Length: 266
Picture 1 (cartoon, rainbow, N blue to C red):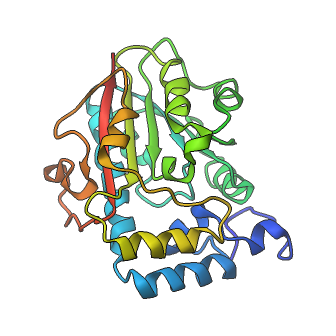
Picture 2: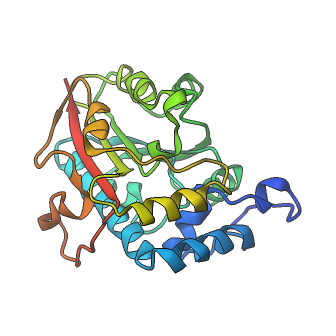
């Protein structure tokens, strides 16, 4: 079922083709997904039964990363590849710590953007725009609520593994990083090949071949390179469930297959 305020033509090719944002929504137990998304996810879960636990562990990483940034004084965020809001959302986490924090949600699925725009209509400090991270300037030129003279929190949570090597993910991160001042922070989580069984990698890769973007596993060392010109916060790039688990009161689930970290821009 489509999200609040969203008008979708059910025979549209975009609905019939699984999308990473809607697959992730289904893994998190959301309702903003379609039959094609559910079918491919169910096939993946048959081979990787802990997929939902991994998705939630990644989501918990995001909440801890945003809280860490907000406590460091950051009060404006760009969530790149945001997907559908799942409470607590980025703005909810940030505004608990920094009242009036500004957040821009960006996604390349128009269904996501329409849903987020309607849902956040009463949030004056929050905006949702349609944009593809592979075209950084197309996003940066439109985030009017962000003051780039002050530190910004850039979130690349579970999105860079949908960018192929030919599409230069490192250059994409660099383009956004070059726009923000020193003291800004970058959070990245990514599917990792380190410690992930080959059969799990194959199952996930096979599932996303049917989607609008492939899943690209990278090593932790490759993910660390995305933090060029940043100082990594402790404990560096690690399994997301091991990134500062003490910052949450809820149980931090295992996240075999995902690594992540946060860095401060120099």
